[in-house]
Length: 115
Length: 112
Image (cartoon, rainbow over all chains, first blue to last red; front, side):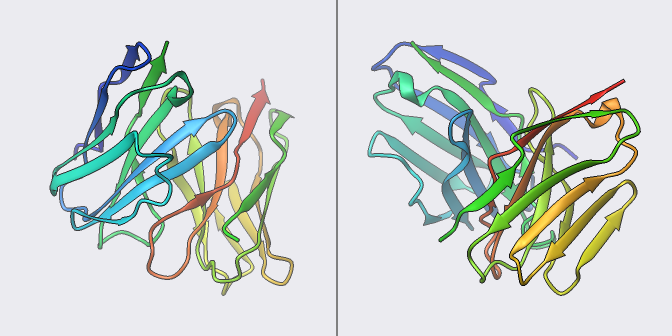
């Protein structure tokens, strides 16, 4: 089975530009998470969807960040406008009702560099 | 408080040695404690997990020890191998929620 698929794997952009990160969760999973990883702050939960509905977005740093899940097989994380401090690796993870609580399946991440 | 504190930040062990990573939590509502392993360029992957109704869980060379009264848990890697070199994260969640609160990570290097 395919795992969680993220794109792009690498993104380099200039400050002020819009960035869109994409995620395809594992088929059948009903929970989707966006995490951000930096050396300084480690792994931070940004937002969590359950059955395509945002449940907890308290980790979204500010209004420049937005996330959508229009259907069970696709989610986006958008940053507009981007800033150098947004440089990080962004992970998407999914989990399903058939898996143990707390077992998240992570994608390989999208490394974002904002110049 | 949702914080999970992890130590040490980095660890160097000789091949065949024991690696020990420690975590402490504050929220007594946490009831699921997984450890994730992350290799460079990859996402974290579940390694082993424990619930607070047991004090220890072993899977192969990996053991979690859990101390509920002290609100601490640790990962022990026996007979550490160079292939174990990775970053290890402890985490915690509560109830039916799947949101994980992660520790800050430990970069383990096992020397050949």
